[in-house]
Length: 366
Image (cartoon, rainbow, N blue to C red; front, top):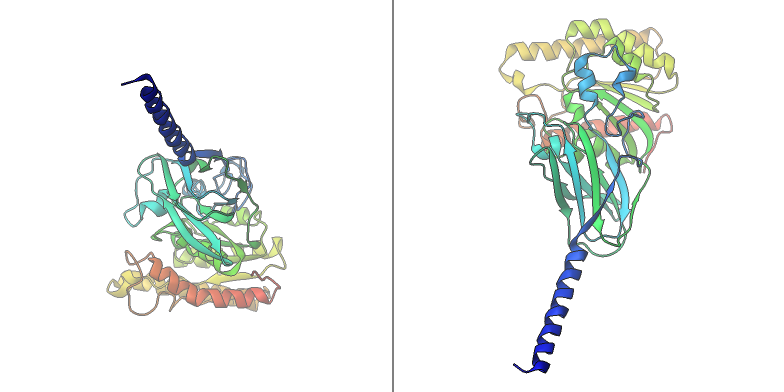
């Protein structure tokens, strides 16, 4: 092989190597830690950015409630980027998987991108261990995109970094939703058995209405305790929705409803309070004990709300729960928690009633 031919081969090899390296550089993502940046869906300011409430401020809260408030249900990152690929690195606590939970909902991420004015599903971060890394979406068109990335619904997020292509823009934006409507509730509020974080019904309400529905779901522990009521009044909101009837016993509903409602009313005299009956648990189709408990819960909450209204508590509303899941008994994963089908049916019933009430107070979104 003569010298000239050897030089040509070396030059061609170097050119190919340069092209490969540049392609690899383009595919590599640059990550931004969002811990110190504005987050969407925060109930209260917290030292840990991914907690919903700083529980050290409320020592009287039950231990189980404190634990659940460390979970990042409803929290999201609102950002823009012109990257054609979006990834993430995130860590969660090593909590045991729930038997009625999809891992993506419990520990994963859920990405939406706005298209033609609507939030459209774009991809998920699939968890496999305590710390994860993955691409949520790729091969997108160029141009700036408005994005909303939901954090895990049923685990404590300990870190989150969002990745975009090298030289691509990345900017975190304030909360995209207007007003603040707090939903205090049960595991159904928190989003148990949804397929992914963005399918929890408070998140869907926000995207569909443009209003900011804050997720204070406390799985199995939305029991109207005095300490919980005293915490709720520190959460500044334009309206308060109490979707917690499924958790307390009928006796607890009788004992605690008046304090919860009156405490909110005193602290926030102009804000409407909307109480939602428990969904009818499908576990009670044949189990008479479950059927009676739910019936007694729903009867008692009507009795208590009616008494409060008759006593002069204003701007207090009741939404019945009988038909929230439909009538074919096919809308839960375990007889209690709605699937995505169940949440869809709930929203069909709840959204127009909630919006009609809120409009009376000038609370409107998009």
